[in-house]
Amino acid sequence: MYRHHFGLHELPFSLTPDPEFFYGHPGHQEALNVLLVALQGGEGFIKITGEVGTGKTLLCRKLLNSLDAGFCTAYLPNPLLAPFELYQALAQEFGLQVPAAATLHDLLKQLTDKLAALYREGRRAVLCIDEAQVMPVESLEALRLLSNLETEKFKLLQIAVFAQPEFNTLLDSEGLRQLRQRITFNYTLPPLDHDGVAGYVNHRLRIAGYRGLPLFTGKALEALSRASHGVPRLVNILCHKALLAGYGAGLHSIDVPQIKAAVRDTAEILPRRTVFGPLRDEPLYRWLGVATAVECVVLAWLTWSVLS
Image (cartoon, rainbow, N blue to C red):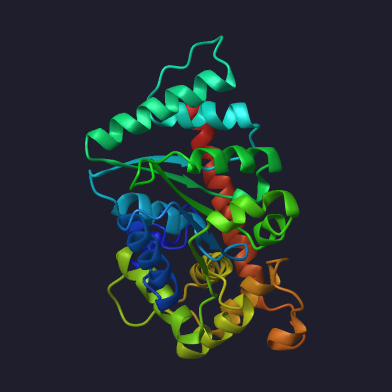
C-alpha cells in the first residue's frame, strides 16, 4: 500500500531472497568471495554458517547467479531427505530420468556417469544445499560418498552447504568425522554493524526505486540497528512495518516513533525494555494497525473480484 506514497516501484523489504537486493556488506561479500574462490579452485566441500535471518539463502541464490556457463549447478532448498531421496533429487536437478524401479546403487551410478560426462565437457558440477542443519546423519554420510567422486586431479562434484550453527554441533559427532575432515573452506556470516544496517536499508530502498531525501532519519537507523541486532531479516520486518506506520500517519520520513511502533508489533524483538525502555501505546502504533487492516481489506476485495 505504501509503494506509491514513498515513490517505490516495488517493496524494498520483502523477505523473499531476491539476488538483486544482495548487499555487499564486508561480511557477506567476503563469504561470497570465499565461495567463488573455492569453487574456481576446485575445492570439494565448502560450509557457510549463520544465525537465523542473517542472509544465507540470499547468499546462496547470489552465488548461483554469479556462476558462469562453465558450471552446472544443482540446488536443494529442503534437504530433509533420506539417502535415496537425496540422490533422486540430485539426479533430477541434473536433468536425469530416474526409472521408477531404480535402486540407490542405480542412482549413484547414474550420477557418477553424469558427473563424468560434465567433466569431459569441461564443466564443473556444483551442489548447493540450503538449511543443511536439518539433514539426517545417514544423508550426510551419503553426501560424503558423493564428495568422494573424483578423477586423479579434480573433484567431479563440488558441494557448498548453508546452515545454521547447529550444523557444527551435528558435525562434531563421532560418526561424521570423515565428512568434517573433508570441509576445506568454512565461513560464518556475521550480523550487520550499525553502518552496515544503514547501508543495507538505503541500498534496498535504492534498488526499489527510491530517489528522494533520506527516508529513514539517522536516529531511526540507530534505533533500528539496536532493535534488530543487525539481523537482516529483522531489519526487513521492522522497516516494512515502520513504512506502514509512516504511510498510515501520512508521513514522508521515518523516525524513531515508527521504529518503536514496528518493534511493538514484532514478537521476535525481545526484551523490548533493553531497546527503548518501556513502550507506551502511541497513536502511530494505532495507525500501523489501521494501515495493516486496510491492506487486508484491499487484498480480500481483490481476491473476491478474481474468484467471482
